[in-house]
Image (cartoon, rainbow, N blue to C red; front, top):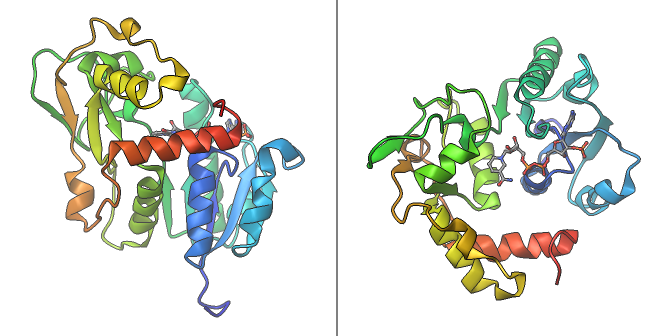
Length: 259
Ligand SMILES: NC(=O)c1ccc[n+]([C@@H]2O[C@H](COP(=O)([O-])OP(=O)(O)OC[C@H]3O[C@@H](n4cnc5c(N)ncnc54)[C@H](OP(=O)(O)O)[C@@H]3O)[C@@H](O)[C@H]2O)c1
């Protein structure tokens, strides 16, 4: 690919779980990547950039969601921006931070599309009465809090392999007709069944399933990924074993999970 043809994408929060997988995929596809971290000098969090730099042009910038204008340099000249960094638990800070990055994109005037990675809690609001609910892109969490309790009470946990999520993000950024929200979930499982699955497949981690007693056996809701599929996207991994084996390996490599 010639340098003229090469597109540049900004990925915020380059040391996070999803962002680091996304950067790898973008570089492998021939993109140049600008990424941001709060502290580029933190070698413990940023050591993976060395391997990623071997895959293609990668620049690391310092930026903080709390500071307006902080992302100006990182998005300058970019064709696309993927907003993946997110402060833990704080909705208001997340909203302000997202607006800060979008303002930087508007200022740059080169960014043709912005992809914001949200969360399942954006569609799960109040606990739902009865069964058979389908949540789609029209569903909003009107409570405006990270309502993981509602998600657990509904019985449904939407799941996707991180590689499929990154493939979907790149698919959507490149797809002219794409617009609005997209749910990206290749399968759904109840909280109780997920606990049973993890306990059975990874007995070494001693997962206590009795604390999930009382959670519904059957999901009251399912999340529909129809809009993304209608757009032409195909999931590669719909196998729970594979999704979790890869996740566990990642956790071990990071030192979050014991070997
Ligand atoms: N992981 C999942 O299974 C999953 C599923 C669905 C949706 N999501 C959503 O996807 C997004 C990313 O998830 P993740 O699992 O990749 O998260 P993660 O690994 O915790 O990464 C979050 C990133 O945000 C950065 N960050 C936090 N506060 C910041 C701030 N004030 N300014 C700039 N950067 C900041 C962190 O960078 P520092 O190193 O600088 O702290 C970190 O790199 C989140 O919105 C999450 O809700 C995740």
